[in-house]
Image (cartoon, rainbow, N blue to C red; front, top):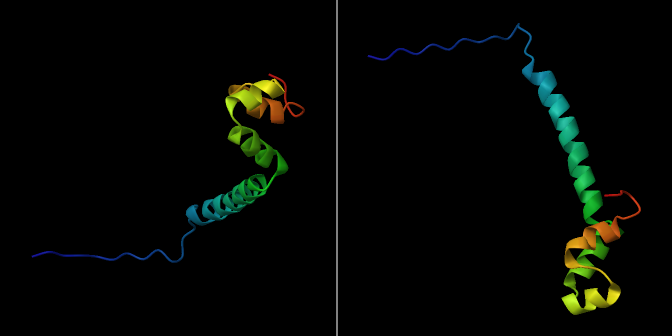
Length: 78
């Protein structure tokens, strides 16, 4: 014979709820950043350059491996 018991904790404080709210907040910010980057002009430029042939890129003086660096060159230096 099996016995089951249900225990309800309605009066206690749970840390899960505040952390879930904080996590949802940062998830929303992350999703907004992803949506914004998807529509950015820089990403479109990367896609446009990526669609070119190696010969076309060579005429422009860009190697395929350097497309992202070329597009974002004013934002960072490596």
